[in-house]
Image 1: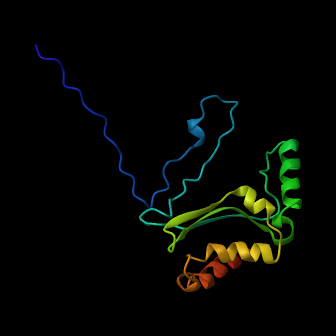
Image 2 (image 1 turned 135 degrees about the horizontal axis):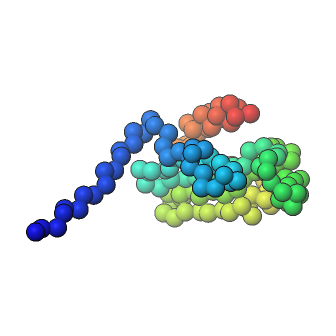
Image 3 (image 1 turned 45 degrees about the vertical axis):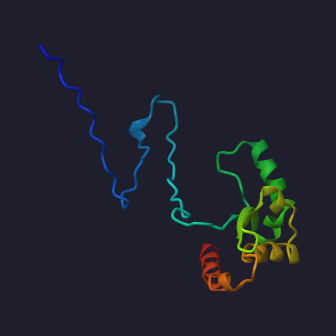
Length: 153
């Protein structure tokens, strides 16, 4: 007698237009746990050869509604000491491809925390749009970026 064949489980293909995966209330393991819903973010740099990325933290309140008092104090302090307070935006990091040197320039969250509103912040944004040769390749993107920031506001 031959053993029964092993059948692999069918994998469900998900259309990009369907918002999977989900975390419905029925997925709770224990009844006293709260349901957590998550966003699945798209990799906007997929397919790009040398992507430049600017990470901005928008707004002046930077903690969630369920943050404890210690977290709230920490986030308020960061907001008060950075461009978040005055401008409502803070640089949290960036990577810029330099065409001339054929290398990336990286800045982290500490770089953004040290920036002051005004010329320093403007210079940081200018650095993001500079490719090592000039600003020409980025100039066409600036109106689109400003439009999107205005829409967020």
